[in-house]
Amino acid sequence: MAKIATVITNLFEDVEYTDPEKAFKDAGHEVVTIEKEAGKQVKGKQGEATVTIDKGIDDVSAKDFDALFIPGGFSPDQLRADERFVEFAKEFMDAKKPVFAICHGPQLLITAKALEGRNATGYKSIKQDMIYAGADYADQEVVVCQDQLVTSRQPDDIPAFNRESVKLLEGK
Amino acid sequence: MAKIATVITNLFEDVEYTDPEKAFKDAGHEVVTIEKEAGKQVKGKQGEATVTIDKGIDDVSAKDFDALFIPGGFSPDQLRADERFVEFAKEFMDAKKPVFAICHGPQLLITAKALEGRNATGYKSIKQDMIYAGADYADQEVVVCQDQLVTSRQPDDIPAFNRESVKLLEGK
Image (cartoon, rainbow over all chains, first blue to last red; front, side, top):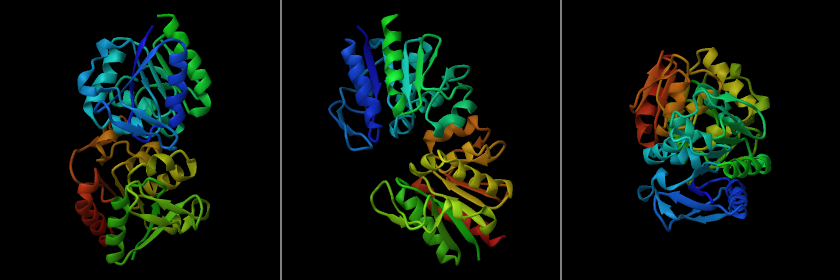
């Protein structure tokens, strides 16, 4: 089954991590959380979820994973301030490995200059950013692009996001 | 003296509101805080500052103000999810009234499509967003564009941001 790299830091949108994580695990996949340092605990913005980091960014390579998952909230904007996370995300996009990004998750892909010419969606506040970044933005619950990139807008879209992400992994 | 509209919500970067607010008031200007409803209290992300909102967005017009101030943190991204704040910011830019935006503040101007062809700076995480939005991005403590738009990157830049913002108001 797939080994899914998950980049996450404080103020992530709680259910945008916990719900997909459960769906991935229920489907038999492994979820590996990545931030600056292994063992650190990061907290969701709603105060509902705490995540213990499995691996530090300096100790991982995109080559070791089958897919990338980017939960939303204010986590992606903080991660993209660190070039290592931008480069990590870029490697998945360049290698055409599956990438699952919800809500503010596409912000990391904008900074990686990886949305040019891609069909995608994202939280309404980043819509114009995504359009400027060259994405063909669609206001719908889930967008699957080139059998690689799955994006959704917000917590309400999680069932569709999980369904399409798990389905895409099944086809790999 | 100038009447400065300040759009702000929860998780603003504390000192990016409190320090410029003091500088504006010390120079004799009036600072009016604006969010969805008057009387509401919003809190900074560092937990140091609480701001009571003076005016609801539906009760103000750009015509009633001389300048716009957009503090950073996670406040601007939330404000731009509401079309009323985007339109409000756009009116200041269109009218060529002074606009002071620090850190994530330019996010509101991106969504207003008001950065095309402008010299500007902003927090490093939004650098690529600003470039895609058509800004000529400079990695420096303060950028003053066309005697109207003052932008800075981060809390360290506050003295330069305050100096140039107050100076620009003096010239009006």
